[in-house]
Image (cartoon, rainbow, N blue to C red; front, top):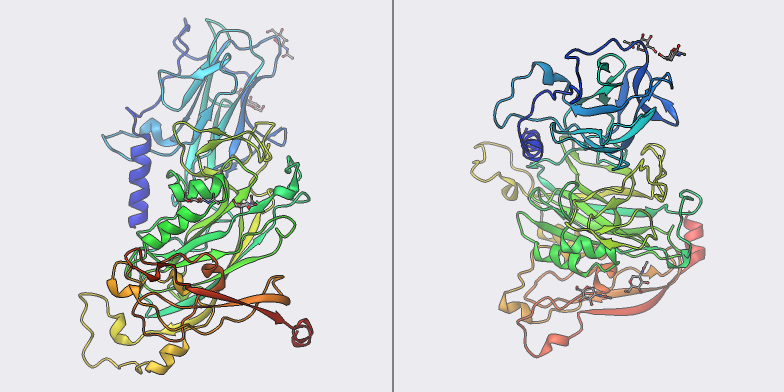
Length: 540
Ligand SMILES: *[C@@H]1O[C@H](CO)[C@@H](O)[C@H](O)[C@H]1NC(C)=O
Ligand SMILES: *[C@@H]1O[C@H](CO)[C@@H](O)[C@H](O)[C@H]1NC(C)=O
Ligand SMILES: *[C@@H]1O[C@H](CO)[C@@H](O)[C@H](O)[C@H]1NC(C)=O
Ligand SMILES: *[C@@H]1O[C@H](CO)[C@@H](O)[C@H](O)[C@H]1NC(C)=O
């Protein structure tokens, strides 16, 4: 409910730039006050694969479409036109101040000498000069992905043949219906404000890179040796935290990750937002993959709880102006418990900080900074790798798998909703024993990303005992030579079985800046190790 209202509000704020209402498209030069009869001469069509789409037309959100006005008799060109994208209900709607306005998408002029934005009406373009035209093309970027079902947009056109005759109505008006199928990369559940699950869960997230010359031949980078993905960075977090969001401007962390492959700021932001009952919980950090190992998975573990029940990640793409792959606010808390497993394709997002249509285009600063949007898929720019492509035909740039590994029930006392008394006489759940709790701490758990560290606590200067060694992680991912790590903490921590995840600790930073003396004390140690490939083969 909240989400819906928020969306409606946001849409209203975005679009309420003046008085909505039906646009009067009467040509300025018209001598006649009424339109003439269009005897099958002038047509408006939406073009796909060089052909007009027919029947009930469905659009996919966030896509670019070509709208074409044509005359079927070349001896009867048109001199003027006007095209408006509008709410089909505009005819009989009485607008009140602040009323909800529909996202009708954006009309784009291609040739500014031929077409311009109308000064008379919103969301309208018109002829810039009255020369004879046999056809004209306008691009329409469909409305953004939203929760709104049954979304309809009407494209209405008026053409003027001369000062006497102008046309509108049938064959010059199209109603486009939203395809309610979710985009293939959207998470299975929308984010929820609260999660009442009385347990914690541990998840594995795996990023499988799929960007390749075979799958994405158009403008595939000329120097593939320099191709790569950044580290996979993200967090499990609460409803209040945003790593990135379509339609909002990118933070400095996402900007750095997308423009270069530097993930430092993004990690710092996640760590700085670690809070017990909001913000972030686990820092997700997977290996970065560089040519020729781009198809190797990058994986990480993280934990969720009722305060941090969703996750977001981002992976930078090199080379690219400012593109990244990722998922935002992926909800794991469902009415049936913690989501078991889900796999989603990933398509590039544009951080909106740099301009550039292709992987290797010379990037230029975007001013003012744009919001995060999909890389223009279905673009009509011939230099784009996604030239005239439909999102459904575009091959995934990565597959993201998230898989639940364990669920840890919480003792009832930790689970009562604040302000809500426990019902008397309710059956108590078995208390979880201390010992069990310690066993839960898997050695490879990325504990450094956990939220319960108090960075300003002066006791966090003392060093803990070393934790146990992590399992051997082969460099090659499966078997062979590898390394393992163990870690210790700065601070008065009592848990003995905790250890850092190797991926996280490769860049462990000192956690407290207030400590004197042992500032440089090692927090992580590495050891070489070996995983027997034979043994693994036998097990499989
Ligand atoms: C609209 O187009 C159809 C199909 O081309 C045609 O049969 C019909 O007469 C046209 N209507 C008008 C008003 O032009
Ligand atoms: C095209 O328009 C001209 C001028 O009105 C007319 O003479 C001609 O018959 C039309 N052609 C067709 C194919 O309708
Ligand atoms: C990412 O940055 C590091 C250090 O700046 C560099 O060594 C590496 O090659 C870069 N990776 C890619 C894929 O650009
Ligand atoms: C990454 O960014 C941080 C913060 O802006 C900076 O201190 C660091 O030097 C950068 N690393 C590289 C390899 O450029």
